[in-house]
Amino acid sequence: MLRRRIKSLIGLDIGSRAIKAVELTREGHGFVMTGYGQTDVLSEEQRPDAILQVLRENSFHTKRVVTAVYGKSVIVRYLSMTRMPEEDLRNAIRYEADKYIPFDVEEVIMDSQALPDDRVGEGAENEMRVLLVAVKRALIDDHYRLLTSLGLQPTIIDVDSFAVGNAFELARGGTFYEEDADRAIALLDIGANKTNINIFYGGTSYFTREIYLAGDDFTHAIAKRLGLDIDTAEARKRDPGEHPEEVLEAVMPSFDDLANEILLSFDYFENQFDREVEEVFMSGGGSRMAGMEEALERTLNRPTRRWDPTEGIAIHEGTVDSERIRQDNCQLAVAVGLAARVQEL
Image 1 (cartoon, rainbow, N blue to C red):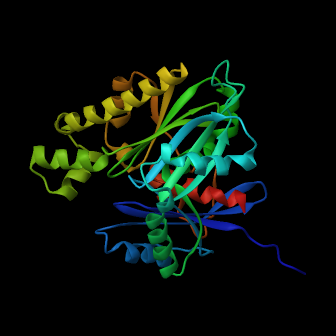
Image 2 (cartoon, rainbow, N blue to C red):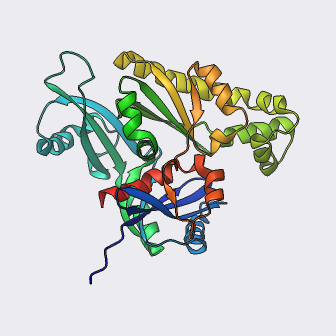
Image 3 (spheres, rainbow, N blue to C red):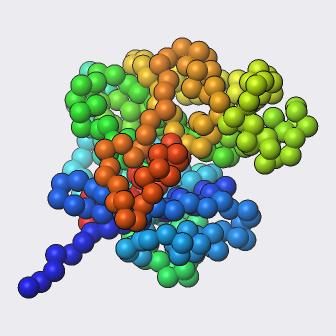
């Protein structure tokens, strides 16, 4: 008798401060988390060893991985184009790419996708909304070489802001978007050195942006203001103890800068599409700062809450520590979203 092939993927989030790996396995119509590991990254040179450490010290069933790229070598554009068949879109995009990409077209790898546009407004029947992503080829090549040198099998290289959207759709998607089809929401993933914004309306991404203000800025502000070393400041950020007002006062300039950039992004979306961002969902290690949820809600003047990227995913207790997942879940949006691509296999 032939054995049924088990489909598994590892979502490998190669962050600036930590490596996070989540393995999802298809079981019927759902997913099971069959592997999880995380470790800190101390330096750029130590990153390959950190990836190997995560993979060796935890139980994974596959070497197939999905990873993500980010940064100034990644360009995301939302375009309005004349409506055309899908098969003609790629040629049209490549022909006009130099209008939208600040790099030589020969130096990038591009992908595009037509987006649902029935809610863009009247008079758009002859136009289509198109998502264009371009990444410098050198960045992709470096990523690929790193993974293959470690014995891994790169299956997909994604963009991390879209991975967060995939994780949200996996956790909340179907029912959430059916019940809230006329509401725009924002996903904020606050990492160590950057914050991703992804604004969704009707289950479709309408706006993405990277802001280079995040958890490290808060940590350094606390260290400088209170005269602490970085490790102590990081711990104080998450647990301010008996004097939370000291921590809030220390981070307030950085926090205000981040909040202002988020509001500018909301304003752009709202002016462009005549839709208000009604609710904010936070994830990422930086979102764990004490008081962050309440402070952002006050400043953004919108309901703001953390969400659990592992919500609704069964945990394989034999290989994954469910208590550890509960403690780390808000940091796993990118890794879960990457691993969710297993549904495409």
